[in-house]
Image (cartoon, rainbow, N blue to C red; front, side):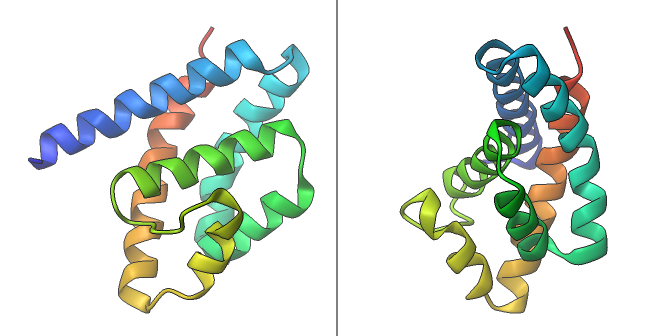
Length: 122
C-alpha cells in the first residue's frame, strides 16, 4: 500500500473509531474518551508505549478500554501486532525487539494524532 493510502486508511479508521465511541459510550464516558485520547500521546512520549498501555489497562473503565482496544486493532490490522487476542496485547508489547517496538510506537502515535482530531467532534 502506498504511503498516502496508508495515511488515509489510518485517518479513516481513527474517524470510525471516534464516531463509534461517541455513539456507544455514555455522554460522561465519551467526554472521558476525548480527554484520555488527548493525554495518551504525552504518556507514551514520557513513559513508553508498554507502560502507557499498562497504565490505561490498570485504570480501566469503558473510555480507556475503547482507546486501547482501538489501538490494538489498528496495530493488528496493519500487521504490526501479531497477538491473536486483545488479552495478549501487553505480553506482545513486552516481548518486542527495539525496532518492532519503535514501529508499534510510531504507528500508535500517528493513529492517536488522527483519533485526537476526531474524538472531540460532535
